[in-house]
Length: 458
Image (tube, rainbow, N blue to C red; front, top):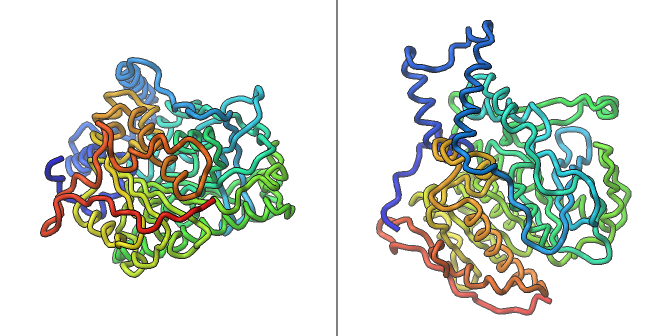
């Protein structure tokens, strides 16, 4: 418990999303110290950057006691994965789909499938373009434990999760969550947002470009001088929520049997998804900016029966929406990211007649919810605030099990996920109910609200 550090300035929020406060501190020191040891771009002409990359590689190798891997799902289903793009323009829907699959010998899925995503991350972190090459060198061959384009396991209907990524992220880097949910019998549609909040995304300028795979890339939309961040982020969160509903519309159309072509023309047959969705069991989950998107989507689309906000960043939201969310809502927070103003906004969602839950994962940081916490060694993970004091596998396991218990309760699932009901209440040595944040002139901790009404959702 204890007093939280003061909230980060808004212009540093991006660093907390991917790099963390340690990265921001380092970058700040480099910007204000011309004689510092920052990489001199003239090294590019001498090829010396390779030596520098080798040093970083050695550090990363030394930092890892064992090879870091994105964890497999803990459920009984094999997991498949594919990418779906509907409409080749930047107005269309683009997502990574995780789903229960048939057993087969398909290869694991490439985690970050294009080098441009690494350049986007480099830009997002405010580092030279060279960092994109270095990131690609280290992480370009990392795979996730899901069978690429494997056939869907047919014969049953699955609940559907729409997942929204954080600022500077993209559709692929929450695979530990998507894969685990799919292994427990969910179909998960992880959206790549086109609102300017992804570090990188692509589309096609026209049909002919799509046919030959000529991608057009766009990168993180930076704030311009004079921009008011709250205004920009509010516009983005509204677009993000509409993208969640648009993705849901398309998946339900496919489920109905409407012929819709995947622009990417992959081996996966989209028609397999016909009659595969349990249309009364749909939820929305998101991390950080995606957590705010969860609330916005719930307020606009009643087809989402409940929502789970992972370490939500609440700044983008209008106060008016807090009273317009009747669905059950679960906040799962890290110990190190949250701050009083953010928690106060979460509290505005609370009301005696609405189901609200909140837990905090002890020893966790903001990036414990994303995959980079698994793909880096201990030293690098701590330097860039990608790891907390808690073991990353323990943290994501608690997050996923608590989520499954909440989903069973509010989607009316006939599973055994209620074995983890106690986690929803924060009953575990690595959890706390409510928050660790002291809210000035408020109660020290925000406790869970009682369930107003136990309705039969079957």
